[in-house]
Length: 508
Image (cartoon, rainbow, N blue to C red):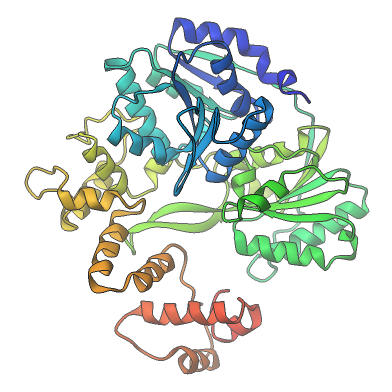
C-alpha cells in the first residue's frame, strides 16, 4: 500500500484545519492506520511547522529508530538529514532535521537545556495510551510552555486505544479527531486448559501450538509475543528444531538487537516468516504479512519494589487492552487468527488496562528532573493524573538522603545535577559516582543490573542443590550481591544452560 493510501489520510484536511484554529488536538486511530509515519509528514508538507521541526515521542527506542528510517525512505532522503531520531546514547540528527523521532526521556531532558524548545514547532505524543511516566511529565511541561511563552507550539496526542475523555478535559480547549482505519476480522482463540509456564515453558507451548495451527492450514506469516530476550531466544531455537519450520525465515525482534537485525525482522521475504518479539511489536511497528499471532500474554513491566527501594522489571501478565493490541496485528492486511496461550476464563480475570506508570513507579528520578527544571512545588505541578502523596514524600526523602536535594529548601544541589547526568535511577547515579571514587565501577554496574529483575537464585531448593551451590558459588558472605555476582558469572560461563543452572538452583 502506498503511503497516501493509508487510512489516516481520511482525516488529513480536518486535522490541518483543527491545528490552524487551535494548537492542541487528540487523534485516535487504529494500529496500522499510518498515524506514526504520516502525521509528521502532513505537518511538514502542509506548512504547519514554519522553519521549525516536529518532535515525535515514542515509548520505545526500536520504534523511534525504525519509524524514522521508514519516513526517510518514503521521502527519499538520507536518515539523519531531513528525518532523524534521537535515543539514549544515539543521536542521528543534524541541523537540517525537520522530523525528529525521540524517546520520551530525551525531550524532557531537552527542557533543561532549552526551556522554550527553540526550534521546535510541534510535539507529537505517539501511543500515549501506554501512559509512561516521562510521557505524562513531558506533556505537562509542553502544555505549560504553550500556555505561557509558546502559544505557537502545536501539541498533538495520538493513540490507537485511548480513553480520550480525561485527556480532553486536561487539554481543553482541544479538538478530537478519529480515524476508523481499515482492519480485517481477527478470530480469537484460547487454550482449553490453563498452562503452568514454570513446568511447561512458554516457548514449548508456543511452538507446539504453532505446529498445530500450521498443520491445520494457517496462512501468512506468524508473530509470536514473548516477554523478554531469553524467552525469545529459546522460542527461536525450538522453532529451528521443528521439521515444520524448514524453509521458514525465523527471526527475533527486541530492543537489544543490533540495528541490522531489527531491520531484518521487519523486512519483506519471498519465504514465510516467524517473528518472535517482545511488546515492541505491540504498537507503532507494523510487520507486513502477519496473519497469525501467538501471544504468551506476558511482558516485562516496570514496577516499584518497596523491598529494594527501586523500580524493577518483573514478568507479569498483560492487560486485556494490551492483548487486544497484540491480536490486532493479525488483521492488518487480511483476515487473521490470534491464539492466546491462556484460557477465556483467565482472560476475563485480567485487568482491563495497565496501571499508569505514575501509579506504580518510584518518582525520584522524575522529581529530580522537575527540580532541575525549576519546579519548586511538586504538589502544585499540573499532573494529568496526580501521584500518591506518600510516593512523592518517599521520593523527596530519598533524594535528600542521597544529597541530591537541599535538606532545608528542597532545591536541587550541585551533586543532584551531577546525578541527573546519568539516565538512571538516582540510587544508581549516586552509586556510580561513589564507585568512580573507589575504583569499582564495573562491579557496581553489575550489582545495579542484578537488582533490575527477580533474584537469580531459586529459593525453594533441595539439600543437594544448596550443597552444590555452596561448592560452586561459596557460602555466606558480607553481602548477597557477591553470591548473585558469582551466580551470574557461572550462568554466563555455561551459556545459560538450563540443566547446569538448575543443578545450582540458578534461574537461567
